Amino acid sequence: MPSIALSTCEGAHFTAPSMPLYGTTDFVHFREGIERLDRELKGEAALETVEGQIGIRLVCDRLGHVKIALTAMDVAGTGNRLSLKFASDQTMSGGLRAQLGSIVRRFPVRRGSSGT
Image 1 (tube, one colour):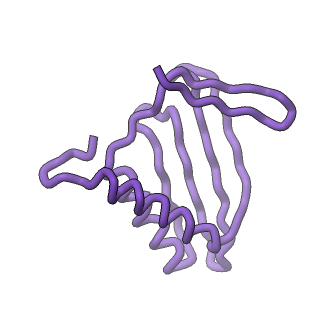
Image 2 (cartoon, one colour):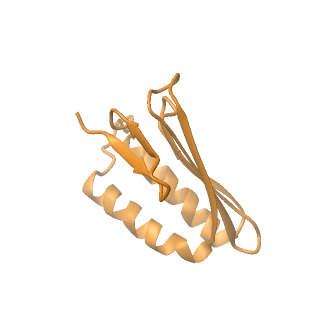
Image 3 (cartoon, rainbow, N blue to C red):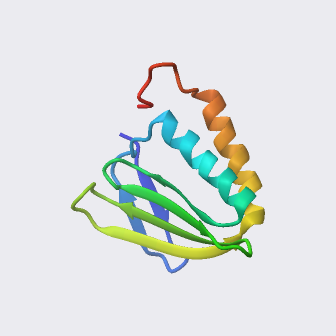
């Protein structure tokens, strides 16, 4: 079974034993949220699994500063939690939108689909 492994420069390791479940519509909504942040320079966009195992949240202020929070759990719901917070600016959104666009083109939302 695939896993997610994260390592720090200090040598600490965190491994989640399975891949999180995302639906195609999750990526569409995240991309739309990032496009809105880039256009309006305010608000937030998030990509989270249903069980909360992996989450990414971007919050943008009117000056284009973006706060990014990542969370990961090794076991959904009851496991150890890893949280990372850092900052960037809206210039990072172009590359992220392009990557999300590639995912959406590769795995399009099908009519009548719930996205999972």
